[in-house]
Length: 106
Image 1 (tube, rainbow, N blue to C red):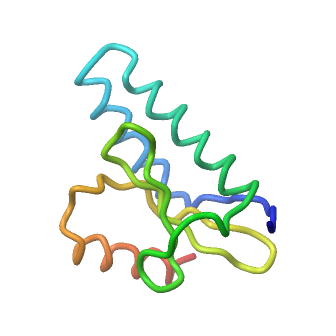
Image 2 (cartoon, rainbow, N blue to C red):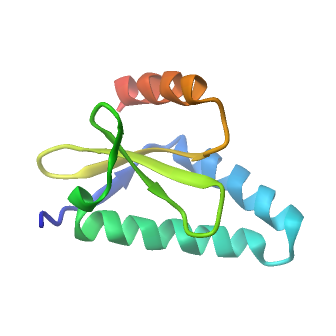
């Protein structure tokens, strides 16, 4: 186990706003619920990032419980960096391109 702090790129805030609005449109309180699930996932990443599978090279993922959204992150020696929170139903090629672009800016 290798606990380390988690940081998120600034653009992840826009991803979270989209996810919040998406779930809020389904049911009242859905937006807060998806944010709670995101922060729970971040706690798990912080506790043990190695427990999550690699999806695209060194980029790992956490599927948010009972949702369509996925947290993508990668590890550095002293921290983990969240680079995206995306709807997992998107085209995998589009996801991969977006993740590559964001990782370069990290």
